[in-house]
Image 1: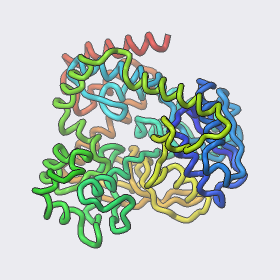
Image 2: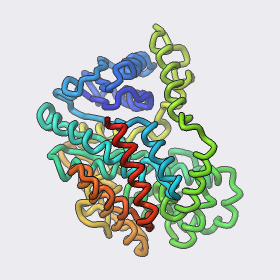
Image 3: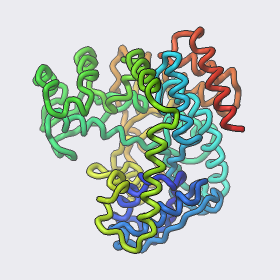
Length: 436
């Protein structure tokens, strides 16, 4: 079996490989390929993957390459975590947008628009080669913005594709932070969905047999003083729960819509006091240096305690991509929360839009579990956001500047042509300079 990791120089993939290694009866005669334009980075991750403690239980081979065609030829699964333009470009776009009063990250806002613009051509190049070299393989997209990339693959290619977002586990962590129930918690039963990073838990979610919303509301006034409240962002989350009577599935990212101006100002203040050479890019450089030193060692003692490997494990809830591959290989109908084109998955969002929902996974199909998790008063916001994302994908495929600006204006938090025009001009020029 051949599993290919695109963006294979990312150290976080070591946690994914560890989850694969823990399932030797499912992943047999395994060949893992780490493909990255930075061959040195791919070689480091490949070497470290072969040296982790769980590797001894597997009959696996490991390969690093910077050749996309060679990497995906004959692949069974392609796990994509590329970052077009690197973290420096994303940080630059966030900095520009913040200077005009706009918030954003890699999933929403002007920075996500530009990231989609850069990444869609790369994704379509990948799928074009997959159609030629491994047409039956499944493309699993971990790369943000997941929703737009899944939409691009679905509407412009014939490749089987889904998006992987560990944010579907955020609710489990939130409940642990607030009530100390642990993760995983056998007594916590939930599903949810909406858009990726703008999603809600269904009303029938339970904790130890009691509706979750009842558990939360009974303790509502005291939860702010719980030890874990700051870790789950209770201060911002609480007013929204009280207003809508619903719990968020992927807590935190939806704040972009409900606290936009506050977050934009906070981001602007941050950049005013932060050098252009970002801490994030410097951290990546430092981690790479440490990882290269470890990869040169014959034996790595206390493997998962070494920096920066100590931040790569996916435990305790595991990796959705590995769980998907296992369910598909076993044809067992396991339930997973993934990003997928809407085909009866989520009520209130247009058909075909990329949604975050639950499916039963079989070898040759994903069976939708129909859900209605979005509060009625917020279905309009989700529909508008989904339409914005679709327009953005079309602009990125067509490589049309005016369409790209139209997609920015369609983002629900923009609201001002006067501010958006010069911001877009600056973003466009910066991205054009990067391309050159």
